[in-house]
Amino acid sequence: MSRFGPLVTLDRPAFVHDSALLYGKVAIGPDVSIWPHVVMRAEMSEIAIGEGTNIQDFVMVHVGGQTGTRIGRFCSITHHCTIHGATIGDHCLIGINATLMDGVVVGENSIVAGGAFLKEGTVIPPNSVVMGMPAKVMRTRNSGAANKLNAWMYIQNGLAYARGDHRVWEGEVFAVQAGAMLKRFQGELGE
Image (tube, rainbow, N blue to C red; front, side, top):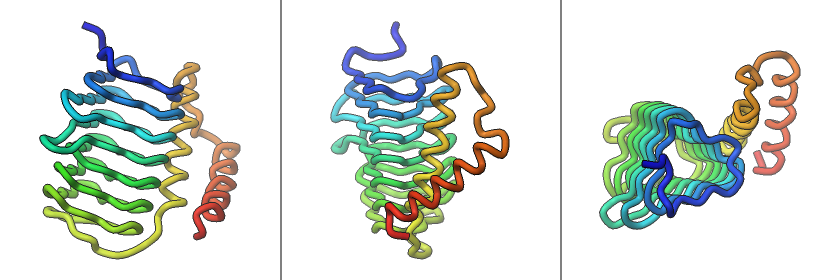
């Protein structure tokens, strides 16, 4: 059995690890990176991953009974997350081992803390910091530039991995580039 189903579309991703399994109607945007042991399944509805987003190691993305899954542009879905029929806006960071259930909507420029559980139908406004089980908004802060920087770093890492370089983040040159990109993103996003 192939590791990609016939309805999977890849639009110039930065990197897709050989262990990733993608089935059903799944659309992967440009510069997306998909890391080891990611599983995406869309037996109904659709999964759409926006430009520059990274789906990190051991993430599971599925659709809900009534909802597809949409992840915006320049997001980081970090290790061991479960995204199940949720919608995530642009420039978001979903922390390690967070779970987003059917019908969850996370507004742009937000952070969902590691281990958070967002129950069915939770709606999070833009520029939120979300924590807890069940999760709730703990404060308001525009984290868009920092989140986009994290996504940019994963684009660079994905492109490097695709050419066999596993240490692109190491060294002063990369740190200087990252600092310049953060300033650029702050300007773009009005921070």
